Length: 407
Ligand code: SAH
Image (cartoon, rainbow, N blue to C red):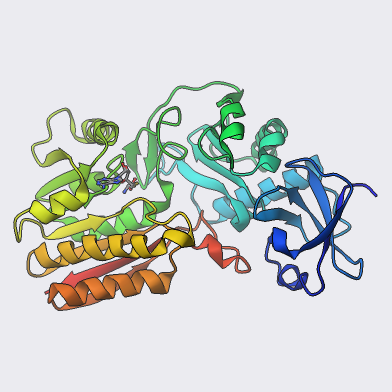
């Protein structure tokens, strides 16, 4: 026996046969050997047939599957293959467009966990720096190997933007407080300073040292472009703006006025840095508002905006708090529908994995009904191509958005 073995209860292999990568603790009949947290385990059904290998954890998701092939070795070559596949997907989607090309794009997500066959791992790339984030101890334990293999992959695939440094940032994402304290964020390979990157030709400075997630919200790239299509001549409110991504696109597109709003002073500072980077120190078309969004939406005058963007944080991190989350979505959307000027546009999002597309849509529908306005759906939005959804793991579809026309 090469690895400790997890034996499943009868019929609990069915989700594995459908290639779903998680095994919940309740599916396990017994464990042979003593797997340590984050170690590799083999998974066998009640008849003893092997279904592949994964990373073990003692929580509710007990195994995150790396392969469903019992003959696959989980070694350096395995990770090389997975990371090469991830890079090739981004190359084939033309996401790596160096500075000097027509519409440079130098920030993108290289690894999106289950969506790239690497559960528990996120890698976002900013120019020549990769920011790696582990959500499981299994990935944390092999971080140095992953960083080295990543560098090899960029060289062997001849990526148009070479990689020079790998920064590790897991102090907020590892599953327990104890582990988070051991994460030791820092460079695993090389060293780099934060510097401007391009998204659709627009410049931003990601802050991987102190920023949320890996430093920038790459997942709104395509939706920001769509905001640009509607922003010209409009008065825009970007609520929950964080680093101001939507605001910068709206200003570039010729918005008459853009108000960026976030309850965090740090976020407003980052937004102002991005405004200054793109439009100089004093941009008369931009205003920063540091305030609670619920309070602001409640107090703002009627018809002050023609375009309102609502991109709140994940109101529900798990299903237990779903009701509160849906109430939160209903509240902010009702206020936006009530107050937007006639013929106005509302971009509304949910990034809660625990809230389904249907539940979110129902919350927005209820909000529209209680606003008494005539509301029509113009676009239905999701996450971009570098956040692929493993079709066997629907939980991976976390970003949901609607663009609405309010008469
Ligand atoms: N739209 C952003 C990402 C938003 S992240 C982008 O494109 O990058 C969510 C943001 O909501 C965070 O910056 C957080 O500080 C802010 N936030 C959380 N609760 C808030 C509240 N009650 N009022 C205003 N902002 C809030």
